[in-house]
Image (cartoon, rainbow, N blue to C red; front, side, top):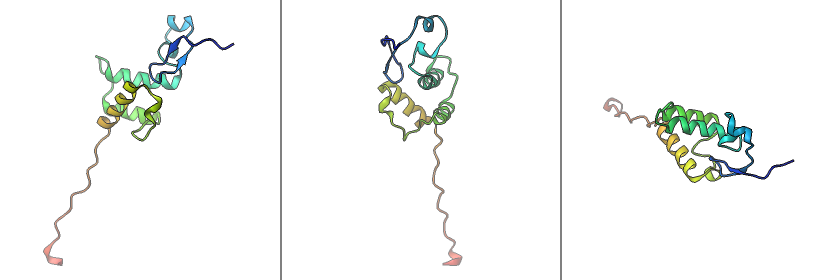
Length: 109
């Protein structure tokens, strides 16, 4: 029997049912609708908490492992979540600069 939704996912805004057991024990449904959203939730929490656990680089790697990159569809996430993930990915991705052009030797002109 499907239960009537009584919570909203903090990551994707999807309505879902959270049972009373979820309130009394640690469970992904305390904050999110699915294990996938909970993985994102924990990454964001570890970056944005007062006791920063992850650097932006580490968080960007974890998001990439979850399949979330700047090319991802961020429309399915809450606006604040999407902007946080984009910022983490942009700040945490090493910038690769193109090689500098070498001066041509006049010997071979």
